Length: 267
Ligand code: NAI
Image 1: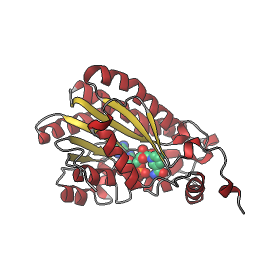
Image 2 (image 1 turned 90 degrees about the horizontal axis):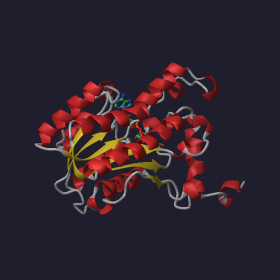
Image 3 (image 1 turned 135 degrees about the horizontal axis):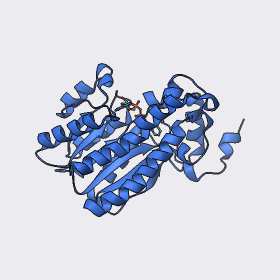
């Protein structure tokens, strides 16, 4: 159900790869709520999935950008502002990729060059985006910047590998840069810590299917799905949350505050 919460707002959505992507659903919900958007993803992602089709459906330009490249980010932001005829009100960073996970390296035997690349893609890109947007003065007063994260930043999930540190870094960038954005233009910066979700990035983690079921049982409301995550992003982009900043917000059906759930022990 749409409430026109984003009427007149303009924003950029990173990371819609295919219909399962969280960013895909967020993009659809943004437009339902009255926003105009630009879609972006890595140049290589243009060959997969249907981001172009999504762009056509939502009347949104698709501008490729490798989120680790300052030149690509500058080009993306300049072209988006030209398209909108002004600055942005919101941005979603929905980007994650681990080279060591992809190449099935264990946490105790990672390739450290790959680890640095993982940090660059999954976390430093968020800093690069915010720095570029600040340099170009690309955000409207009171805007909202979000990134998606996971509770492995705070607790141990052995198979999450180097993504745990990536998410810890990402959340730290949200806090530290959030201060500067608040002072500059009352722009809010937050991370949403989402339940395990059946997507390309999610299911790349070893043992994901079993873990998905475990988290679903441990969470009193069950795992939060993609649709509800998109709804939460809409609220965070809206003016209703104008005083929320520098926070890591758990969107996980209660998982993060659980200690023990009898249903998990049942044979
Ligand atoms: P996804 O695989 O659909 O999205 C990841 C996106 O990152 C893809 O669109 C990919 O093309 C993009 N990407 C990778 N390298 C890039 C680069 N260099 N430049 C620009 N884009 C690049 O998977 P999902 O699950 O929708 O992931 C979105 C975010 O949600 C990620 O940050 C992920 O870590 C986070 N998240 C996912 C959970 C899950 O269980 N699926 C749980 C908690 C957080």
